[in-house]
Amino acid sequence: MSVLPVSNIASHECLSNHRISSTFDEAVPEADCLSVVITGHVDHGKSTVIGRLLADAGGLPEGKLDQLRGECERNAKPFEYAFLLDALRDEQAQGITIDAARVFFKTAQRRYMIIDAPGHVEFLKNMITGASRAEAALLVIDAKEGIKENSRRHGYLLSVLGISQILVLVNKMDLVAYQRAPFEETVAEYAGFLDQIGVHAAQFIPVAAQPGDNIARRSDRLAWYAGPTVLEALDRLRSEPPPTSTPLRMPVQDVYKFTERNDTRRIVAGTIETGRLRIGDEVVFHPSGKRSHVRTIEAFNRPSPLEAIAGEATGFTLTEELYVTRGEIATRADEPPPAVTTRIRVTLFWLGRQPLLPNRPYVVKLGTAKVQARVDIIHRVLDASTLGVALDRDRVERHEVCECSLALSRPLAFDTVTTNKATSRFVIVDEYEICGGGIVQEALPDRQAHVREKVLQRDLLWDPSHVSDERRAERYGQCPQLLIVTGEEHADRKGVARELEARLFDRGRFVYFLGMGNVVHGVDSDISGSSGSRGEHLRRLGEIANILLDAGLIVVAAAAALSAQEVEMIRTTVRQRVVTAWLGDHVSTDLAPDLLLPNTTADDRMSRLKEHLQNRGAMFSGSMHAKSTRPVTGADDVA
Image (tube, rainbow, N blue to C red):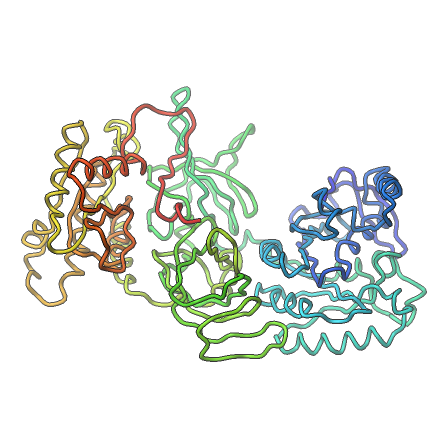
């Protein structure tokens, strides 16, 4: 779809007395823009609806319509208004729209962003991305073909995404001779379907998009219909409350450092989903719980603003330098925080070629965060086209909707759909393909909740040094990192850890070996020997490591046969990066280590460990003029 520049949209008076203008004048408030997704079964006329609307309203660049008509004549191809929206040249050859794209226009009421979403089953996954930004929907049904499976699926998917304002356009009325009966039959059937999923259509409108009936002007051929045109019905829809009035949510895209001309700024960059951010605000990053105050809000080629608001891509600096990573969500300390957990209950629309299976590894993408996940429990499965419900299912087939619980490999920050839609929507990736999407319904308790609570309290009362992490890293030529060597009881974990410490020290690195025995027989002497104390030993090891890491050291620790849950507890406690290396040919726990060290020579092990630390950004030399300070993490390796 070609995105038509607003500057090229000319004014034209329609028969319905609505006007689409070429400029965004002061008569329409800047914030009043309604996002509308248009969807429906393939060939039911979605793109034609928008193309006809723009053409009838004079919303095309001068000569564009004649140019397209000429191209069609030269290629002996019938002209269609849908061609106005094709963004990719090969879309015209294939005859289908394969990407969600946007066009903009305005009426005297407000501005509109129309998101064109594909109708083919093969491209249904694209609609998740397009529709997730919408506040309302136009759903197109062919009057002659009637309601298809995708008509129902799309309706259900819109309800899953929380889009309740729906205009149903019964299109191609010219193919049924503009008769009233086919329209009323479609209305009765589809309204009944929507009622079952708790959705009420704002309006059913009979239209003929190709000749232009009831799109932007009324039609005498549909005189029996007394309702609004499409344009009039759009103007009657309500806009969502401005997202600036809800709590701040800014997923961190990256952190940038500019070293040219002694520029010492570290800029936290991202797009504000909801809320507003002002200079001086205290911000908290989740799930880490780190906090600081906003020193400046950055802008490109213009004076720095005093605040940034929802919808803006922005960057800001902090009064205290923090180690913040991609995927965290920036919030304001004086506003309700997001949920943080490793277990979530979701409603999920599955689109993968293979079924969704429990305990199979997937990747969840929410905001800028990526985290490995698996299906813990499938609560129920629903066929989106028939609304049949199945319980006790062990898999979810393609095009089915399920309610399930997901177990995540590490804590994720998010909101539930009833709290904040923008940060409740996610997609699931399976082998590098988006295979599903949905919304988070509930944050479930997990085993790390008490540890996160202690860490949040610790960070709230943390007495920071005047020497920033950045200054230490530049002085030491390294970034703090915790490397844990684990493996079976008989494996020489301590020997490998001590040898690595010695070799790194000989190379001038600031490194320290932290033995588990030092913790157990030192700060843990009060609980040493008590049953069930291993978890607390590991938590305290993490707390000690956290202090050493705050001093800028590379810490090498050793612990026997760590599980995934135990490593996650350490990661929750430690504010810096954690790397795990398993000593041995086979991993005997459920841990997915960052590095496997088979039984080879000591030199080979040392070489692999040092190379891994180097690749992870733990050791560096020199500097770059404009570089991202985002570390490479396990989550980044997955999708």
